[in-house]
Image 1 (spheres, rainbow, N blue to C red):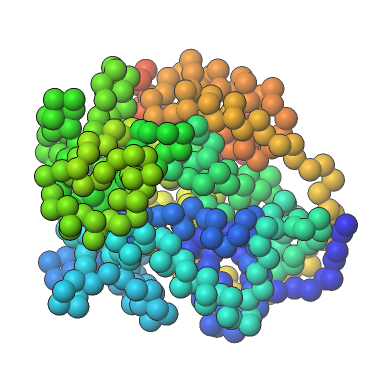
Image 2: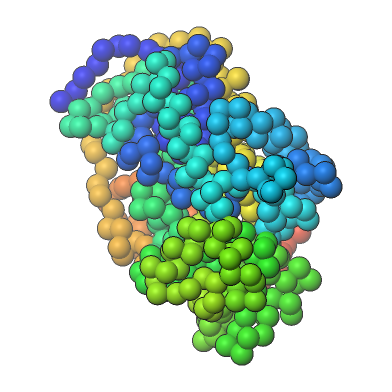
Length: 495
């Protein structure tokens, strides 16, 4: 059934992670009428499962310039300095705003914010809530606020199919939910649908993280960039079918990575040992796995009571796998975790389609470069949602007409796609595997997962170097001539 009431709202948000929820609230506080659509429930986003925290230079020994320096260094030469400066300078204000609306960040015995440290950070600057359940605690506050805001209409279990766009202008989207297909018209459309980690067999992401928003934006003509940079988190528990993430925060509190003999192998790899940037740690652990060696995370030398107090959800998760976080050695291996690429945006979240914005993991804003600094992801959601709403709500309505999508996309063969993506476009890549991946994808029916997998594999094949999260076995070194970001070819060209 098709429904069309020709009603236009001020802001249409696709995605109910922290970026989408925060944008909806910011717009409503300005008096805007908002419709928020979510493919699943409001609690099914990637953000909801985020563990570590939010990075912000608010400590007495810290300042935004140091936060920026750490972000730029970890980004391996591909960060946009302008975007990074905006990210780190606005961080304290956004954290204050989250506290204003009721986010219960953890505090120490003296009542000061408890700041953690993670890999790549030179200071303790990670705000966290509920120990290592930060995403859930922030999301619950935002969800409650969204549901109580009369200017926000929430449509759960409603998927965005196509944008209402023509001539380089977007005026909303076609969505389907509860057997009803309808256009949602808006003056500003914000895609905040998250990343694509669920394209891989081994991932920390929920099953719905398939890059849908990126695929939809690309079909409308938006530029997509940096898709080769998929971050593989180094320490997912290597037990059972699903990759249970062991937060980087445990290494920030002193956990060690050891081999079978108990030797701390990262001390031989990087001067920061276990607190080296994620790409360094993930590459070392994956190389050891390829060579038949198991890597373990251990907290056995730390105070058990302190571990239980700081990481209650990790203690429970390890227990479900039959392990004691405070005592046992935990076998770990990398898992697909975060996509640095996505819809190319400017400094206010605007795509190159008028009226269309993107924020969070689906966006390529330039803040992460080739390798994201830990806990900058949640920060990006708040900083750039705030900027996008401020920039986009002043747009005048544009009369764009769009026919209903005529040919629904096929369902992807996800099990096989995920297996192939892990083996051929995963943590360690080479031309033969990437070409094999693209050949297989070319024979699959059109679907969002297929399209996004093609973008990742093609971008990885095109970049003839190893940089940050992108590791080519046949091009093991960085190439100074490739120290720049690479937009994907236009859709009319070969992927």
